[in-house]
Image (cartoon, rainbow, N blue to C red; front, side, top):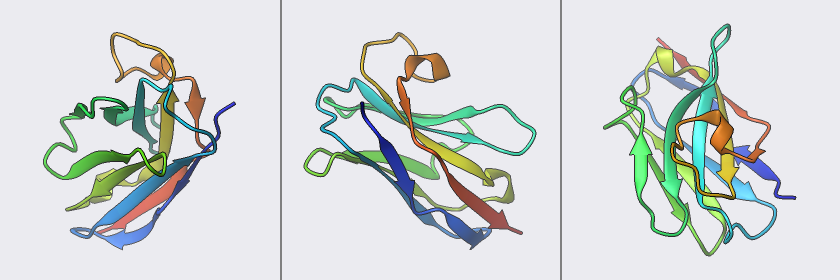
Length: 125
């Protein structure tokens, strides 16, 4: 059973930056992909970014493209989300997720087998 733990959330002013980290408790070499989702109060959980664990190919939601970057480090089994030019609408709980199998669309929640407990990101105006 893979356990994921997110760190790096916090309070930041608009225009600022944060870097989220997600560490896996076990080797993620069998993972096909890892991703970040977020959920704001009263809203559904939404896709932010995904990365192919082996090849490194990435995908980002249009709302964060050019501001957020997902990356991974094989040596430490960690996935990162660098968030720049933060906006108040980026305020949400951010979740890390891991998919053990191939799925046609990694923007979908159903593609992922394991989830972290989440980390709060609050952007003040």
